[in-house]
Length: 153
Image 1 (tube, rainbow, N blue to C red):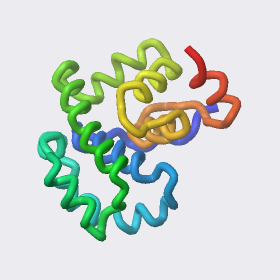
Image 2 (image 1 turned 135 degrees about the vertical axis):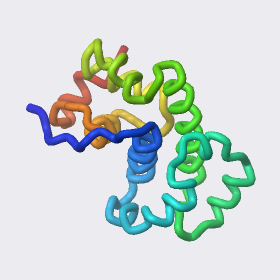
Image 3 (image 1 turned 30 degrees about the horizontal axis):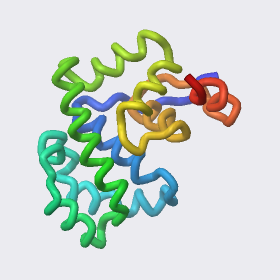
Image 4 (image 1 turned 180 degrees about the vertical axis):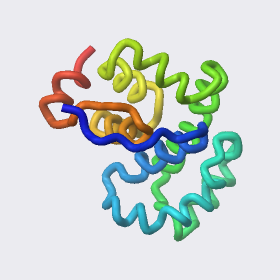
């Protein structure tokens, strides 16, 4: 059974924003993240992949002091690292969308495992949420699906 998917982002920045939202939502009340999202967008250069990929320790310090942002060091660093990774695969495949298409040729299981392995703070329980948020058709996720498809080799 497949669930409703969202429209695909038009740019790598759009994919990056959805990935960042997934990172920040993980383990947090999603309503809190939605309320803070305009401030988070501003603090992360409106999720410009090129700009955030060049954030440095000074930017991390600034974000850790920013009351409009979820001040979780690991999540902030993960978002910055993911910008670098999206920039890299975007160059290799001409866009992040093309990267997802290339990886998904081997099925949703391979796509999920690859995204979990390559990107920071996108785990087994959040990968399907991220992929749906960027327009990928994914099965309805439950504990049985996760155990069958995401655990092990």
